[in-house]
Image (cartoon, one colour):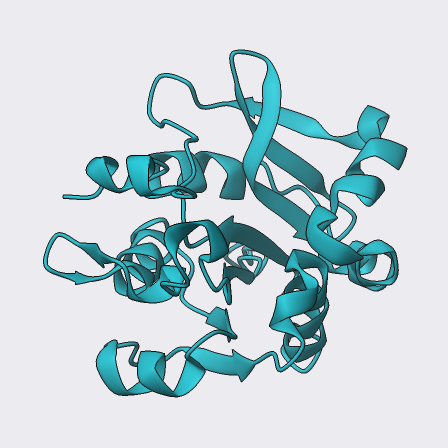
Length: 202
């Protein structure tokens, strides 16, 4: 009899794309143009290329326009009416949506970090060991995105997510458990936050 191989874990992607671009004059980040298409499309493509077949996307500012403009086939789109309260509300909405799936873990990425590509996401995704896993990309030793949360951690992450801090408080409290995944050689963790940052978009 042949040996049975354990099932591959299901590691979903969660893209936080609700921001209104306040410092960009109110231009929703999901709709900024990158390589001729909306930035949200690029970010979803990165998650898929990294191996995330299940992708949930949290929308907020101009959600209707994003749905009309961006090609996001196969994605689960989640509207976050409380998006203006900060990233924490989007993280909670995304994790709540994922609890209805059979995912063992999720890789969380941000729509406004186009310098982080599929190679970095795949590395962090590869740090999964169990449904209790906790891992994050690091850049020159500094923790950044994306972050991987095993499913057993989702409820506590959601409970601690407030304002613009997202999962920062949870990660600080569980620092010793985080597996840092060096990604400086394959990614740049800049944000598109101000008009000056727009030059980084192609």
